[in-house]
Length: 445
Image (cartoon, helix red, strand yellow):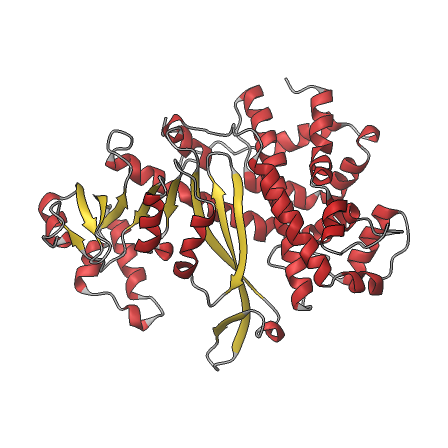
């Protein structure tokens, strides 16, 4: 049972962890602070940013009032505006790097399935994009509309470890840098023993080859049109003819005309309704350059993967189930935009926009590890109920002021009562029509 002392400790942990990142030291290192601050301390600058981002009150006046309440003094919006310069952005970048390094050192307990234990980490890379004030198109070039007017957009490239429910890497890029170009980013953090799950958007044989050479494992959908060779490495493989002949495949092949990457090729037939929907979407693609051929449309009737995971670790069917886990990152992005106001970017300077986003990323990195994971474990161990990330994010969004005040003065409130509210409102509902994420992972055992 979760005791009052444990609850109290959990409640103040977020601020303690933030303080453990040495924000004062990082503020001096970035030149955000050059002498002892009289009003705006680095820790309150961070917490004030978190509150205004989460509440969607991103005007300078709201940020000034929030930091003023935290500091117990009056601060003008002009004073805040002067502080949000290049040095403030550098400070937030350093804090984010420190937050990721800190969460990486935490105990890795949230493995919900024995099936994932052969791997050190299970990494998924994906991106989400934000639309900005058109005036920032020079800094963050985006797509063009029907009148050929350039938009301002940026992408947040994200890597998450599904075993630890932990963020490993963030990077802000221009929207025009597509995911395939961002594919090698994963190599910056790759460790031997990792399993990398790749979406088609990140399919790049050079990167996949580098993953294998690094002693890690890959699982990726196969991009249509990539050259395939039989086990001798020389005879071209007619994929459509082969899957039509056998119905399903689990064979060793060589991938790529130049790379000749040895891999396991898996093809599993899809139900007719799902195959029909995939073909409909392919035909309706807005990019006319991607008009699918008859062969391509036929192959959409199968799920086709390449991997270097051995058969004694995962069967072909298990490969498809494991790949389906990558959708977890889409749930994460939804929590950011629906409940943490990430898409509510202020119409402001490039530096202030980036500061807004970095502050949000610091918060979500720490929230994921020090709030969601620990609350999940505490509640699951007590009564086997699973905590929903989306529901917990919504709870924080709706009650952020009470929670922040709670973090500030826990001795004046009742931690157990707050946790009872979280555990009551934020667990998954019992459903018979589909399984939630943690049920999917548990089913892999």
